[in-house]
Image 1 (cartoon, rainbow, N blue to C red):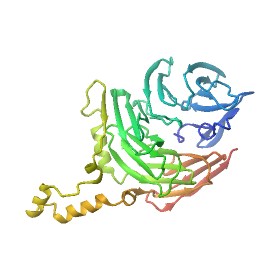
Image 2 (image 1 turned 135 degrees about the vertical axis):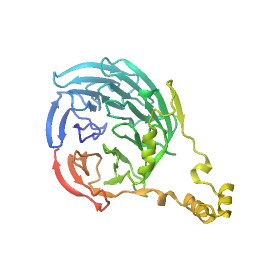
Image 3 (image 1 turned 60 degrees about the horizontal axis):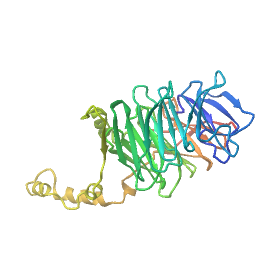
Length: 377
């Protein structure tokens, strides 16, 4: 999360065709350069920092990679040396770090290692994952990992602390973006269509929010949930940053939170799969017998409310989804965004070397205020 860690320029923003021979680390608040590393030869394709520490994962990239593309080098930036390496049978697509885990994403596999000794802990198979989609929660006491499942549109959520796996049928098309909140209780996703962002409970797999970015297809670059889990932001190739509220359905979210990840669980590993029947997806077309009896007896559910519920259930999702409360325009370049340390602020970093810090109105005045702007490249 950008509000609390250094940002490594060219980590997610550089393209594989244009790798970097060096990298820079910036502190985002206040915005200052903290580290600059220049290599004499060879390109880098992936750079991932472990929070604010001196440990960085490096993977080679480009036509002349500094390291093999199927190898992860654990770099100690303080002592300027490699302290470990991991080899794989195919090209590395992404690396995620936290103080107790190293997660490496390949085309169809995810490997999870212990951070201290690089011992392999778990291995998971996935659908083809060329974008290296994976989201790892940052909370010290919660180990939650989200990644694509074995079939199109599925999300696998690993709750390592309770040895449980939740499978979520999130989208009908391929996943394009994944995000997770600070404590791992929420998972957000977008498909290759890029019109909807869906937010799920990681414990139950239930969908809590459906957020509409727009009607036109778009490539979602990043999805981020703020530390209090009350707002979500996303960026896309359309050049608009969207900010959504997650508090309108606070009651349902609180119910999920109160149940918690430990409710009704066995101590052994179990898998939960959320299936959706046709009637569950579209609602009941014909009011139930109980509803009709209640209407006849003057009960709380009248025939009018039953019919109203029917029309609501068959209305296009375009009208049912929640729209963003604020937007901010940037040049159409690849961007990542994260919430700032100050309340109701957002930081946006562009591949063109732009830094924005903006403020938004939580009550939904639509427009954002640009607080700071830098051009660092």
